[in-house]
Image (cartoon, rainbow, N blue to C red; front, side):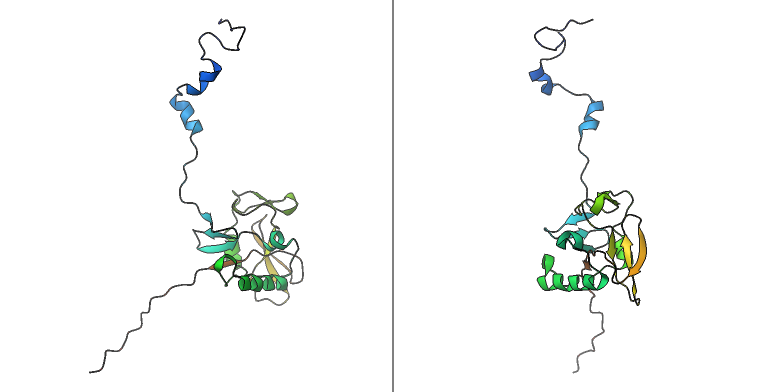
Amino acid sequence: MMDKDPKTSETPESPPDDQKALEVKGPETEALEKPEEEGPQRFVEKGPHVIHDTETGIYWMKKDSWLDKGKFFNWHEGKEYALTKNIRKIGGFNDWRMPTSKEASTLYDEAFENQGKGGVTLHIPKPFPEGSFKVQWVMADTSTKRPRFDYTTGKVVQADEYAFGSVRLCRRDPVKREDRRVRPAARR
């Protein structure tokens, strides 16, 4: 058994505390201390208001309407909210809109955990700030029942168009098409 130096907590064979940082570590400890390798990220912040999903090509407002305004919106108010953001050209864009159900579902993944309003767990990625409302209005052409995407369950639920909710606006880059028209030969 090794005796400890009464003045320090070190054994005769251990290095002094001020030299412990200089110790050479073995390969088994190096693997534990390496930071995760950073590769291409799926969700990339594009300024203070916008997140770009590089997998789908969709641009999302970073905050939903609840985080932005601190109040709930019905479906019609959600449409007006999009118009206001377009007038203000948030992120430099003027084509913000409600997402489709399919677009909204691209943010949902059970592996994601983000705390929503009231402490519920939302399954949206971390670049989105905590505190979002759990159900978000999505586009629809129905009469009085409108769809909302629930980020706690990953399901589309129907609600009265005047029920409370929130909206996270999105946009896509316009599709660029090459001009493939055949041009008539020049007349001679």
